[in-house]
Image (cartoon, rainbow, N blue to C red; front, side, top):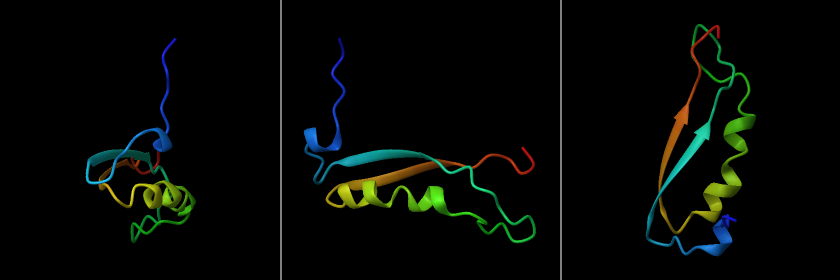
Length: 66
């Protein structure tokens, strides 16, 4: 069986971490501003846990109207 590690199990200080987030939040069509930023706010705890690492955030926002 494969062991799944958590952030508490690895030392990431000073290392580069790729953090993939699924944004897919509704946008205001005329301005592109987020109408609901709850998914963005939900990643803050993990970003705080990664504060000693170099973090590259990769996100995805679905196409408008999809």
